[in-house]
Amino acid sequence: MTSSPTLPVLDSLYQRSVADYWNAEKNPVNLRLGDVDGIYHHHYGVGDVDWSVLEGPEDTREERTIKELHRLECAQTEFLMSHLGPLTSADRVLDAGSGRGGSSLVVNRRFGCEVDGISISESQVAFANDQSKQRGVDDKVRFHLRNMLDTGFETGAFQAIWNNESTMYVELALLFAEHARQLRRGGRYVCITGCYNDAYGLPSRAVSQINAHYICDVHPRSTYFRELSANRLIPAGVVDLTAATIPYWELRAKSTLATGIESAFLDAYKSGSFQYLLIAADRV
Image (cartoon, rainbow, N blue to C red; front, side, top):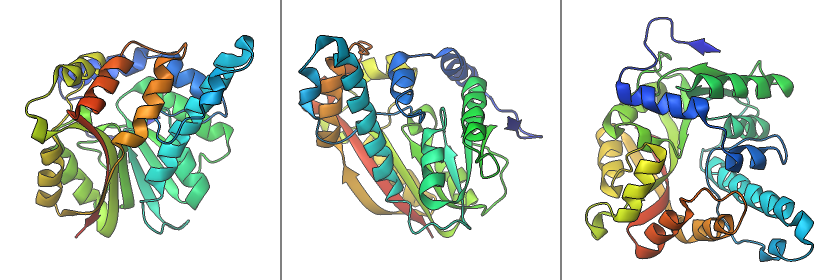
């Protein structure tokens, strides 16, 4: 585990509360899905559900459902990776808010590139580094205890950077300024995120429930595009994944891994107050 030699990892009480949450987190919906193939994600899924997993023998229903939920979250990762640009094994990329390391390992496997992952959770960083070592890729995939708003990495170090459902924990103006500093000119930034719909008005009750559950602050859609452009990150593509993620939440709500937040997500998505977007932007 590495941290910046000169910068504090946590610079506010809020960041400490988030780090404490993820240091203690052992949610089966994250761990049981990762146990399927050893790739541990910390995000949601997209795509059509194979509802037949709910049929058949009761004693294997849970196993079938978990595999299907994991397949959907892996599909989300692959969709994000397909927007990172033409990466090669000579490139270096950054996973900002890397969780237990699943996305970083997938990127390395797909492109062969060097990956740095960062998290403010000591337990996540230790877990992810152990996963990298077990796969024999720790020479190219490394995880660090660092703050994504002030990483300490050198300017222009990365060809691509992504956030996978982690932007709601930080101020976007600060985040995108740091990403722009770290990206090479012509580099690519990609995020998948939930955001509240400005056209709906202020955050809905369901969005407020999501904020309270995850100790986060979901941003309005408009803030993403305003702050990206203000920091020389020009949107190159936007995909509305809202309809594509609803089936994942419907299946999860029927599973033994349901946490109680599923109804809030489904209410928010179906009411139009909440959207699930992929945004790709180029550094100019």
